[in-house]
Amino acid sequence: MKCKVCREPAAIEIRRHHAVFCKDHFFEHMSRQVERTIHDFTMLEPGEKILLGVSGGKDSLALWDLLTDLGYEVDGVYIELGIGGEEGYSSGSLQLAEQYAKNRDLNLQVVDLATDYGYTIPEAAAETRRVACSVCGLSKRYVLNRVAHDGGYDVLVMGHNLDDEAAVLMGNTLNWNLEYIGRQRPVLPATKEGLVRKVKPLLRIAERETAAYCVLKGIDYEVDECPLVGGNTGIRMKEWLNVIESERPGTKQRFLFGFLDRVSDQFASAHQEEVELNECSNCGQPTTNELCSFCLLQGRMADRG
Ligand code: FES
Ligand code: ZN
Ligand code: ZN
Image (cartoon, rainbow, N blue to C red; front, side, top):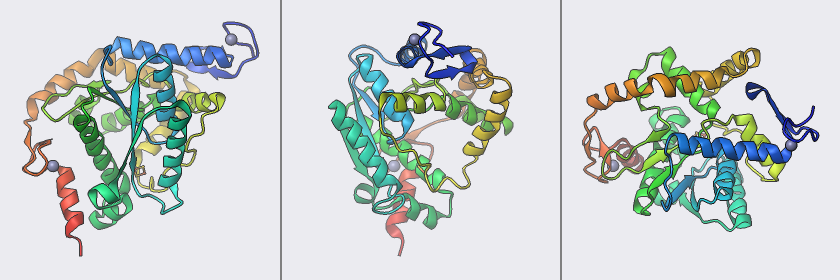
């Protein structure tokens, strides 16, 4: 196979775009896709202070690389979740994130859940008897927003890719979970004091493309799945979507962008009317209750015997 731009030997085929690229034209394609997403959804404005949630995985490191090459100045924040013990998953991911930041001379802040908030994800999952991904998602959302807000950042950038977003949409649609569907936006505006705007510039990029990007660019990333994903329906949803995608390339993109371009506004406006937020009496972050769910969790972890 030959690159469709320069006819040199191909490095990757992207079936949904009917395209084959050599290494350099693949990098160019990735960069253009990200730029287009940022532009189409007005994600980033010149001069804004930008923070990226970095996990050490392929998506966040590829995104950091792409944004930096596009000329954005982006700081990173890594949350140490305490998964897998001293030489396990979390510490390995942290090393890879730190290594990347050092190589490119970028700023990475590290928040340690155990030191800063008094618990790890495995401990919280055991104590609450919830699946790890649920307490993990709650903790990450809270801490990322908090760090962005307290650090004076205008925008928090997330590495969610096409596969992630299509899987979430599929899961919520199969259950007609209207409230969650209404919240699935490429840009989540800062609707209340204490919240920072969140954006997802990798929406047009599939998982295998961020992996290929990192490999071809020589970026070392955490290849292992989180060992706690058992019970995570998002992963199953991705597998099912992959079956459809292999028969009908482009299905995921049509599903997600059909939703974003044609109906998401209606879901979002219906959702906004329903929710009234007030301040958490402990931390001041917006919540629908007296205490936000993060402070409830943290309180419960502090009280354990
Ligand atoms: Fe959050 Fe695995 S990374 S539970
Ligand atoms: Zn080429
Ligand atoms: Zn709170």
